[in-house]
Length: 307
Image (cartoon, rainbow, N blue to C red; front, side, top):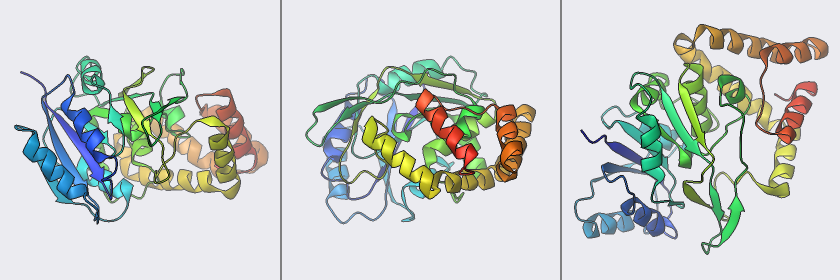
């Protein structure tokens, strides 16, 4: 039987770029999908555009509902944790990107190679575009193995590239949509790796990520982005995000592998230690980021107790 996919689209005043994204769904080579849109209180033409798309694209199955109006993360997790949405695979979607035609087919081809009972997550690099669809280059290319050691200190891909199987979705549902985490995509990466699942980071871009002034989360590329992350590190943002993830992972301890549960405990304990014991603890934990500059920043965070 043909597997099924649920596209989980979150919207909020996205009328300017939404038509291009909706059109890219129609061009998918994998066609056995349904669209679930959660709108967080749009006051522009977003909802009428979705209704127009449903009317013009005969046969397209679309379910639209009111979002929780608690921000982007809660909106996405609300869709992902809703067990009434039944599918074999699930794909997060932002409102302002453009999917390449093989986005779903590439992801699902890999996901089908993983046993259904094993949590599996596909994600990818992105091609950057501006407000006028002009090419602005590629996101950083990551080559190190995805793992829980990496996930504790970094999210390797945007949620807009993520496609995951039902076993991974059940991990999200186990923790609930009300969990207080900084980013839904980072949270998904943490859960799948923490449970010993499989993660595929595809170096081939599968979406065109639109960078514009209203982005909730900006593109992680260029010296400006690096400077912003340095400022966030200095301000203690990463330490606060780590604290949120750590607290949320307590809900998930029963689903972690024994190895990852021990790693989680060491990571938590090391954050509280004095200078030299903290360095040793993080060395023993073996946490890492994907690039040399990223690991230099991680070292600074450990030295200055900002993790």
